Image (cartoon, rainbow, N blue to C red):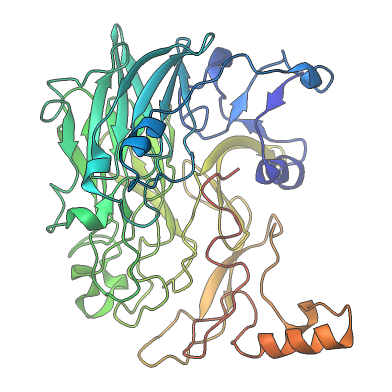
Length: 459
C-alpha cells in the first residue's frame, strides 16, 4: 500500500478535484524528505508501505528530542517563541529541524542523537514582524561532497551552512550569510522585514521570499520583490519586481504612480518549482494595505497572483491574478501543488493553487492556461470614499469551492426564537453578503475570513 501525507485539503484534491486521474508529480524519494513539501512540487507524497491501517496501533515512541529554544527561554524569559511550525528535512539519514527561534539542529534520524546545532542569533534582534518567532523550515542543496542547508531568518539574513558540521560557508555572502534588507529598490527598515517560510533551491539558485509588516495604517511598506541567490557564492542572480516598475509588464495596473510607493505584494508562504521545466511558481500576496486600496487604484498586478518565472534567470513566463485590487487579505496562502492529470484523454502537467476564498485554481503549469474555464463574475461595489474596486472577480468553474462562501441571515442558528433573534441582531451590526462583500466604515463580516479557507499548510 502507498501512503500519502495528507490533510483535509489533499483529500479534497484527490477525491473531488481529480477522481482517478491525478498522480503526484514526483514525491519524496526513498523514504527521505529533501524538500519542505517532500519534493519541489509540494506534493507531500511519500511512497512508503511499512506503516498501514492494520499496524498503526502498534506505533510507539522511538526517541525524543528537546528543542534548544527551551534553554534560551529559560535564560531569557522575555523571549516568546511561537508554536513549532517547521517541517523537518530528511537527507541521507539526517533530520534538519528549524526551531521557532530560528536555531537549526541536525539529528540522526534513527537514534535521535543531535549531531550539531547552529544559532544564528536572530532572536537577539527582537520579535520579528507579523507573527513573531515563527519559522517554517529550511532548504537543502548538494553537489558531490558539497552539501548545504539554507536558513532564512526573522532578522533578514540568508545563511548557508555545511550540512555535515553546521558551520557557515565562509565564501557564501559575508562569512556565510547574505543581508536581505540590502539589494532592494529602496531602503528597508530591518524591523519591518524578515523571512518566515523556507527558501527554495532550484538548480544552482536559492529563491527567497519575505515577511513584511501588514500594518493597516500606512500606504507605504517595504517592497516584496522576489530574489534568487547563487547557491555557492550568495551573489544575487536576479530580482523580480512584484509591483512592476516603469516600463515593466503590469505597471499600468497601478494608477497615479502608486507603483512607486506601494509595498508588501510579497511571497510570505511556500513556493514550488518544476526543475525539469526550469520554472518556479510564486503565490504572491496582498499589496499595502490589506483592507483599503484607495491609494493604489487599478488591478494591481502581480498582487494576489500565481506567477511562473524561469528559475535560472527570473524571466517572466506567465501569471494569473486570482483577486483584482484586493482589499480582503485574500492572498494565496499555500504552496502551489504540482501534479500530472488527464482530462478528457489529454495529459496535462498541472499546478493547483488553493486560496483563502475556498477556491482551487488549476492551470497548465507550462503555459498558464486554465485547465477548466474561469469566469469573471460581478461582485459588490464599495461605498468607502476614495475606494474603487474591480467590478468583477475570477471564479473557477471547476472544482466546486471547498469552503462556504458568503453569509446571510439564512445561515444563522435557530435553536430557539430567542437565540435566533440575538443572532440576527449581532449580524445586523455589520455589513455582510456574498463572497467579496467589501470592507465598509460600518464594518464587514466576510466568509471565509482572512485566515481562510486554505492556509499556509496547504494541500
